[in-house]
Image (cartoon, rainbow over all chains, first blue to last red; front, side, top):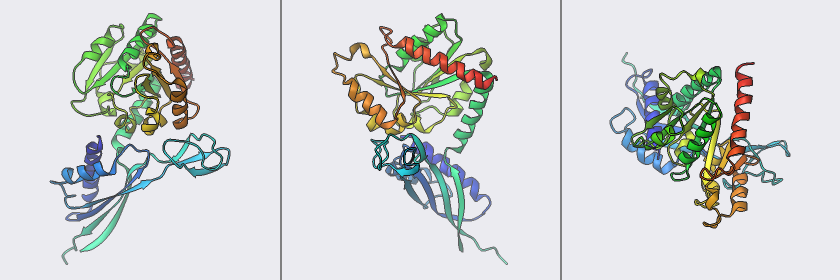
Length: 120
Length: 226
């Protein structure tokens, strides 16, 4: 259960970004999370509501995009998506694969904000 | 009101990753080999590490350890019996070690005086895998009492490990440990990983493990000081 520390880091990063957009309201925070990142989306959502309560992120939605695990198969000389997290094998040739190309990401992709129109 | 999308494309654990990178550079410059030990609670990390430290110290190597726990300094006291310098990190509820905790607890130690630094993580098979501590080698431990399918249940941790240790093999028979299945499952998650089967109590398998550690230190020093 380290989702709360993860959400706290998200709040810090977004707050820092927002200093460039004074008065803006955050509508969405979009994450890219690898299937092998050890993060549970439900826990993230649960912690998000609590951790954003007294911040500029209050009321915003957390959108989590889960990225499947892609490995490089040497035998096929191609990147392949593994069929299950319980078997790191190429789905085509069944050889073990150990060179990961995607699956551990834990990133803030973007945020959607409503900017205040500048007074003329 | 205008709606705007601001691209961040930023690692959420960026601060930890940056600090871990600078720790890794420090460790390499000092020529100290750093190993991060991760497992469930009760796997026998402390017993395994105590024996490892003692054997290294007895052989004249300069080894030290940081040990993470939620509370108490019991493990640090146990490990200090090996004669190696040891510091306890109390996380007070946090379920994993972070690079900052490691950095803070290294204060006052001259890393260049060390050959090996072991970091015993908090007993947890989930969270420690997300936090880079600047280690060179991540060691995943699994005891014979835990169930052979643990690597399948916690693929993230076993997939991110550089070496796997099976502990408590002295009681394998009594608990009906299925060795072939355990090794197959570890390989299913991390093909070709080095696996050591050990008992810290009887010393079985420790010589192979220590030879591996010494070799890794040798390779590491060659890179650090060409």
